[in-house]
Image 1 (cartoon, rainbow, N blue to C red):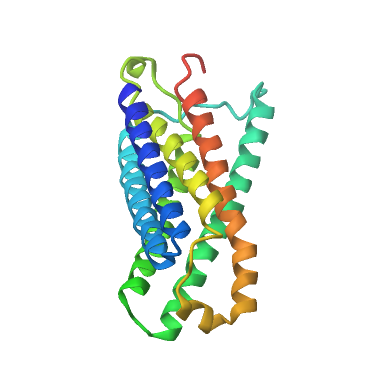
Image 2: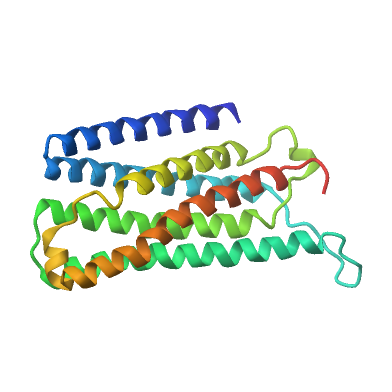
Length: 231
């Protein structure tokens, strides 16, 4: 767990440094440079998150699906109901995340005005989509697993889950304070029109923030329940 914790601290420090640079450039009216800092950070965060998610999926293969007798009374019915609610909320956030990125990709593709900044936006949107899907799949699978007593000392995947909790908190903080301030590519606004683009941003951007917050909550529940000694 220590490795995942320190890696997470390093990640969140890097995020804060990026935010300082972003606000520094914005304060000097260098909005293009600020947008580039945001895009580079966005791509880096989601690529790291994707790799961490894939590694976590590989590690949790060592965990077990607990057996539940369908004819017996389930004393944890309330817990299962809460888990179902978490999955529904996760799906809502994921839909918002996907709609936000797909909307941006449609705008960029529709204009066909390719430039370095537009390509960076494409990479950012694609990395967001892939990372969000992998992480949601990880949460759905890991939430149903339990650690075997023989693996209690090893606790496979727990360090990566720890890192992913901090990663999502860092992305949540950055999206909360920067997503509405970062300058978007003018070609996207021209494609949709200012009013339509503002509507899309106001509709889906809050869901992307919610997705990161709720993902960190779900991962924390996995950290607490999946690796519990008793089950």
